[in-house]
Image (cartoon, rainbow, N blue to C red; front, side, top):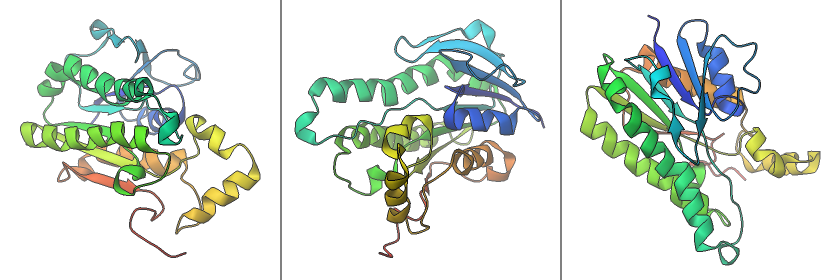
Length: 232
């Protein structure tokens, strides 16, 4: 059955990959700052700026069956080099902007037969990692929020979180800027490679589908075994 799917931030990276997976079977709305890369996709573009939380609600359908929030940050620095303002900015983009957007479309989500919401965290919430204090704090807030929201709106809505390890996306390009860095990152994972956009988008598409209709309130580690295995 065709659904109305809203992707916040789908003009590149995982959101763009997900849009390509969904657009042939569903009506996809992408809310992003620009429509870069979207020219060849059969999707509806809505201008959205995460910093100002401006979303044109009039461009959306009355009912939204699937919601995915993609924007995020990767601020990997020693704690002593992170200002309180950096923590605030990361929390604003990763968490508070997401909450504001969910608020804005809540009536449309409630109009669906059973809406599915998908958020993104990080493996660093479950596994303490150096230099991840800011991103882990803001993404940890997402995990707690998602579980509480899932409990509050069950069975009308399903809410799940994907917690990836390092994935080859534009956001991570600084960490993968040469072959040596990539080899080192590959070696850290039990499956000996970093994630791809396809890896993460495939799980998001599954969580939006009826195949996951008995899954809610979960944090799925899509991380090459990083969060649970020690094979080194």
